[in-house]
Length: 351
Image 1 (cartoon, rainbow, N blue to C red):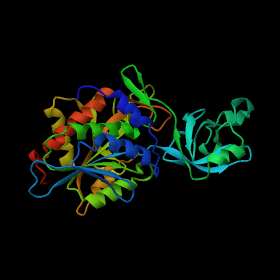
Image 2: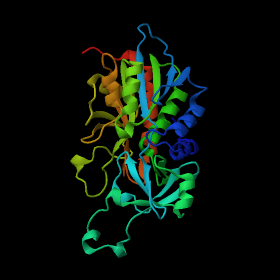
Image 3: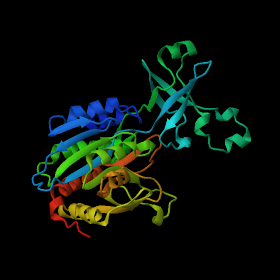
Image 4: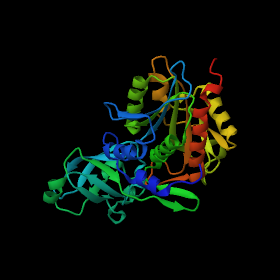
């Protein structure tokens, strides 16, 4: 893969789609892939499933590749007498990072708001030494209650408002988890010509609230092989010892060994390592002590289980206001994945 299509990636990153409300990002993805896949459809939970037929498939082998299209966000839970909006989170947030963050409340009309909390000048000495809890925040829409309620009601989704930018050699913006991998899967579907087996490229829903889409898709597709695409922790920053770094930015795509939901199948681990080597790309391995990915849903929900693993993009500031990824790691994910799918029939899968 030569270069990142920055405009397309920015479009994917900024299109809203929190868990349970993925319709806008699903529509945008369809626009990109409809002419390059053999088939696509949406299942009952909202997963977008694409199919590219393999070159040799005498046993009807299926490979499921999944990237989740939902992003962490919020849902309106209450509007107070002064028009301030209270909310619940959909997905995990680091509370200390949301102060003054701009958001979009998607009602009958989209309204831009700001995450507010008690200002430091009004805090007691004890309060100043504590991290503000997420349920202490509110959203200020700059409007009175009567006008807010013309457009907004409980249950409306809330996404973050932020564009993608370049910071040095890095990509920086909101929701790179997992829109950076949505982009990688789109580019893979556009690039791959002769996969060994039928490829089911799945853009899953509701990963951030419990891998719900991957469970449904894994059960419905019943794949023989599975590869999840997600981001992982890059703790290559000051203050963290080397043994806790997980991955480092710019050192290549990560081949997952373990996360809290999956022990990756060693056969798939070796296949993914081999694939990176075949295209002369660096890679690193990933042991993620906390946090799970769609790998678990793919691995467990197939009728007889799937031979499953994952490729991960190292990322700083995960689940914070802005996230950061190295574009070379993203390009490495696409190139490695294409080779892995093209050579799936060349690896040994017996125990």
